[in-house]
Structure formats: C-alpha cells, structure tokens
Amino acid sequence: MSTRVLTKFDLQVPKDIPEALDVLDNYKDTITPVAGGSDMMVAWKLGLESGNAMSVTALPGLDYLTYDDNEGLRIGALATIDQLLKSDIVKEKYPALWEAAEVFATHQIKNTATLVGNCLRASPAGDGSAAAYALGATLTFVSKEGERQEHIDNLFTGYAQTSRKPNELATEITIPAPKAGSKSAFWRVTRVNEDLAKLNVAAYLEMDGDTCTEARLVMGCVGPTLLRLPKCEALLKGSKVDEATLEAVANTVNDEITPIDDKRSTAEYRRSVAPVFLKRTILKALS
Amino acid sequence: MSHHTINLTINGMPQTVTVEGNETLLEVLREKVDQTDVKYGCGTGECGACTVLVEDNKPINSCLTLAATMDGRSITTVAGLAKGHDLHPVQQAFVEDFAVQCGYCTPGMVLKSVALLSENPEPSEEEIRHYLEGNICRCTGYTKIVTAVQNASKNMVQYAGGDAA
Image (cartoon, rainbow over all chains, first blue to last red; front, side):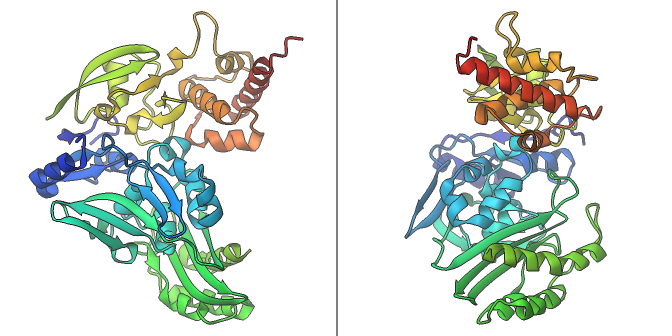
C-alpha cells in the first residue's frame, strides 16, 4: 500500500460499449468501471479497494450535457463536474447541483470527476450525489441483457454499495425538468474548502405560493449512506413554510440520522449542527 | 498485468511509451520520459504538486490519472511553458515577486495559475485564492504567490491588449 505506486492490476480501456460489456462479463465482479477515477485511485492506493480497473474514458460520445423541457437534464457518464459548473442551464434550473459542483473538491478533480462516478461511489459524504438524490435523478445501466433505469432512491444499498450489478455499465444520469415553482439548494460545512464535508444537505421543494407541495431533503455524513429525511419532508408537505414549520423540521431531523465520530467530525457536533444547516438550506432554496 | 502502448504529446513533443495498466501519469512522466519537473507530493490529489495541464489548459492531478487512459492527449508541464529563454509571464512574475520558498509546490502553482488566467484573465484576490485551493504550499508562502498571479495578470492583459506605451 502506497500513495506513490498502485498495486498491480489489469487495466482495460474498451473503445466502445459492446467491448466494455464483454470486459465486464469476462471479469465478473473482479473489475470496477472508472471514469475520472479521482476517488477510486485514492481507494486503490490506500488499500480500501482492490481488483481490476476498466477505464470508460475511451468510450465515444458519453461526455454530453443536454437539456430539454421534456427529458430534463441528461448527463453522460463522462461529463465532468467542471462541465456542470460551466453550464448556464444547470446554474439556472438546478441550483442544488450547481452549488454542489462549485464546492466539489478542487479544480483538478472537477476536471476529471463525473456525477455518474460520484453517485456510484455511494459515499455518505458525496456532494454531487447528494444534490442528484434531492433532485430525484435516475441512472441508466446498460448490460448484455439490455438497458434499465434505476431511480436514485433505490441506488444506495449500503456504505459504498449500490444496486449496480457487476455486468452493468452506467451510461447516463438524468434529472427531471424542474416543475413550476420548484426550488433547490445545497449546503455543506468543511474544515477547509477542499475537504470532504463534515455534513452536507441538499433540498428540493415544490412551492405553491408559501405552501410546500413536495419536498425531497437529503443529508450526508450522518449515516452509512446519504439519507433522505422522510419525517422532515412530511412536515413540509402541505404546510406553509414559516418559522413554526421550520422549527418543527429542525426538531425532527435528529430522529432520522445516525451520525458517528470519524476523523472529520464527532457525532455530537453533527447532531448539534444538523437542525441548523437543514433550516438554512431550506431558506437558501426559498430565497 | 496489462501493457499499453500510448502516444502522448509532452510539451509539444510527440512520444510513444509503453506503460503498465497500474502506472500513473505521474510515474510515467517522471520515470519514463524524465519529466522530473512534475512533483510527487501526497499521491491522493490534495496537494497539487503533480498538476499538469491537458489539452486546452485543463489542470489535472497526474498522481490520480492512469497513464494508459491518456492515449492521444497533449500534456504541458512547467518545463513546457517557456519559449526558449523567455519565461512565461506567470513564471516571470513568480521570479520577480519571490513567490518561491522551498520550490516544491511551484511547478503545480505556476501551472494552476496559467490555467486560471486562461479561464479568467483578471481574477480578484478571492478568485485567485479559491482557484489555487487544490495546491498546497507548506512553506505557507501564499501571499507572494497571490501577488505574483495578480502581477502576471496585469502583464498578460497589457500585452494581449497591445498596449505598447
């Protein structure tokens, strides 16, 4: 184990999707598809991951970012965080995603990391994935058996675990077009800016005047996966978002999270700030 | 083990190298093509010492990049910035403003500053500090680095504007 030299593994660099699916079939569950690889490379170096690598960087035509009012935002598996950050559509229509892209790691990493990869690493501290979760994204998986869609609500199955099957290749993530009156925001707290979050929050709200008609709240670094906050969401839905509602939401969030002590924060700290940051993120979305 | 023969353009020079699947771009640059101006720092993408520019001035961490995935790409290291004996304006500003202490972070800092100024020719101090976040100077000489980037920006804007007066 070294941060200088990677342990020996096979690297496959398929040139098209059929070849990539052959590779996945041949290696079964001993190979991991990587795009930017910024997180997997560290995991391999630190001995947190093992096995072989399949780089998807040579697959043609996967670096797209497109939007239309019917299909919403389509983000190819090779579209980088930097592409999201430079997109006026993302900035205007998906504030939570844009704000997560803005604080996502460093510029070097923004230039290689992808939103699809960020979601599939299934880190409980993911920033892009927290925003995608709140915005109700869907991933597309391709295998020799065909194509299937997986809603992000069903993606995270445990710490660094997803519902992707070993023979499946993720090709795209889509985010529905924002409904009229919808708002979103992202917030995180770190020690210094380029750190991973001590705690992060993404909020998506649909509003009819002052009344919230739909809410998706996601909090990170407070459980084995990113967590939805269904009790808090239920308090918002159908209610006027005023001081009393926000207070009720803030008082409820600690029932829904299970933070631990780790090198970035203590459980006690996370429990103390969770209500405050949740409230602030909702207010930020509405502002 | 998988072997891969790849074509890279390094500082404008086309090169063909055979690399192992698990070799990083940083290892290949330093050990196979003698580009030792690219530095190994943390190896985990936090310090920025290994920064190189790909294609149109995009900074990446060479320590987190598998070399075999870079086939056909054009890479600029700090040694590729000067034109003959004429330093790049960012290098010149780092010299004039003494923005170097031990010098280990300098190649990454210079390249990252070049990338910043190509994206944003007149950054504010806050923008400079934000953009340089992925590059760590453990001598903590940030003030002079920021001054150097500001001066490089002034010189480059003046030059690009054709202001000969």
